[in-house]
Image 1 (cartoon, rainbow, N blue to C red):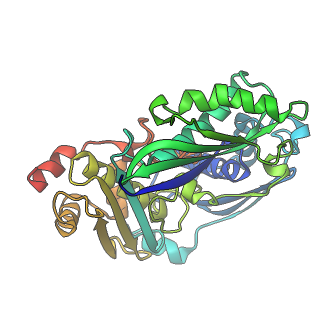
Image 2 (image 1 turned 90 degrees about the horizontal axis):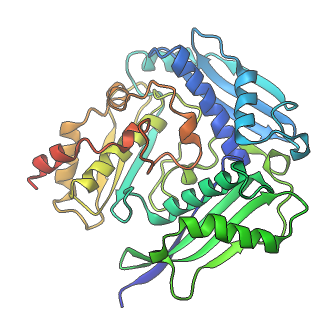
Amino acid sequence: MGRRYRLTSESVTEGHPDKVCDQVSDALVDYVMEHDPTPQARVAIETLVTTGTCLVAGEVTTECYIPVEKIVRDTVRDIGYTRAKYGFDCETIGVLTAIHEQSLDIAQGVDTGGAGDQGMMFGYACNETEEYMPLPIMLAHKLAKQLAAVRKNGQVEYLRPDGKTQVTVEYEDDVPQTVTKVLLAAQHSPHVGNETIEKDLKEYVVEPVIPAKMWSDAGIDIVVNRTGKFVMGGPQADTGLTGRKIIVDTYGGLARHGGGAFSGKDPSKVDRSGAYMMRYIAKNLVAAGLADKVELQISYAIGDPQPFSVAVFTFGTGKIDDERISEIVLGNFDLSPKGMIEKLDLRRPIYRKTAAYGHFGRNEPEFTWEQLDAVDMLKAEAGL
């Protein structure tokens, strides 16, 4: 028997307070991208939600008028906070704004094509799932999405918008073998007992999502609402902030993270565009067969159009050495902010969709960083 270990990742539903904030912030980015898609339009928006209140603050430079209150209320309505008894609903929340223009000190470097901030970003891909993502985070996202789906379609009518998922996978020699534990936190109406919730969520959420081949003979330890009750939830119970779910947004903790959040930022901010580009390159490298798993780091200085550094790690799985892969990456991809934005077509209203259920591993046309259009080139460059 090889080396065995267990890895865990979590996700959250779109009704989680932090994800409400991410979606509001990205809905505002989308509005600007749609109505002022010029390189001069800049957005850096943070949102805070708590009982009965939504505060939107940040820096925006644009020629278009932004109907902030309407965007906030529409987003909250779409998520499902539509009743005053939730302590936070689209009709009655107070919407406060504190928005001003981007600093001219920053703008003078970004206007010439430089990075919108300093920092480092990571991208990752592996071959353990068809999405080239770690299995624990993919299953956690799918469970969270299913939890929201059965609420919205009425299949489990007593559910409310807030929720979290957590999945533990047992590995042997770095290959996933079985799912050992699933933890679900599902907000619900007060008249339903946990025994009913456990039965329904196993039938309608867990069983449709976890592949049969990942169930061990002993089954999966499924835990629902560990305290036995989850009636009060959402912003009424937990203050939410933009950018507080950065591990949920990326690789579930199974790759490094540079620390910068994505939501609320236009693509001139390399926290977003750099991380998307690194995911794109990593995924194509793995799909091309250059390695079984790849992690890339890139770093920038504010106002500088070229990266400070680029590093490639294949963890001993590379078919050629990491230094040669780095040379291929630097020689074939434009890693300037302008180059990344143009390659991935990032000045479009695509961002609210990214703000729940992960920015990576989703085969949807808007997610250009998931395309596998560099595979043939990479194979040729590597001589494979």
